[in-house]
Length: 341
Image 1 (tube, rainbow, N blue to C red):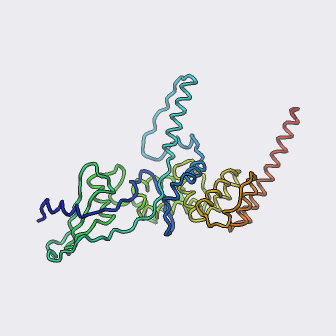
Image 2 (image 1 turned 90 degrees about the vertical axis):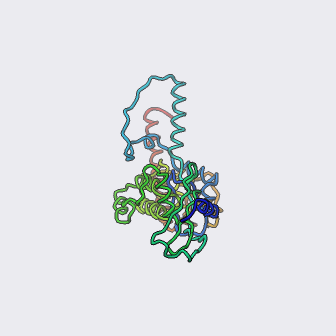
Image 3 (image 1 turned 180 degrees about the vertical axis):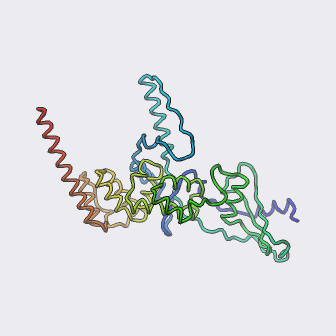
């Protein structure tokens, strides 16, 4: 029998390493990489570029969502211009909150630290004992949790044990003790085929912590599916678009996104994407190219130096030039028809 005093002493000996915050927002998985993406992701310039590339669309931000919440009836009000401006500011603030990008953190390491080995109590019981500090107000990442194994070993709880204890005593709404089947490869593949990208990312964010290996596995599968199908528009103007772009840039795989930008006429986004790429990958061959105001030349220089699909990018640039020239001729003809110089 362990006294309350001994339990207190056990907890005093525990030192749980602090990890990232609870995953209120989803986080990206990075391929096995020894680099730490955290400091790069929170860099002010990187954040500014990612937020700009997200391209907030109010209609998309406030569209109907598959979150299980009932749809509220619209409200109509008469307002003065001043009241309307104040309301628009509040709406913009809410948009910024809804599009707040999730943190990017490195995958956590297993907890294997042993506090003590007491072979004299080996065989005392056939089950393990879990000691959890249930003090109110302590965060899930700082909570002290220890496990006594049947062989007498006293150790820090592993991640799975910590998850179950935290969820048992301080449950997070919507989070399940058993990982939902939708995150198993068989069901996940089906969801990705149906392009339920945002739904999967939102649910993964709720179920897992940002440094959880399962979260990394699920989110990387989503980002790879989006990239392989070039369905970037599905996540654009959502909080997950920034992490998607960061994931592709970090892994030096922006070719499909760059091609999609050029094809759709998002030339400014293509330029910003290249600048982000050079910022995150300072050893790239294109890091020294300068942007002198000629966007297409800047993109072509990058394609020449860094892209394995140079031919496709050059062809897309040429098509964009021809389309732009055709539009100019049409506009000139319309002005001439209306007697406008």
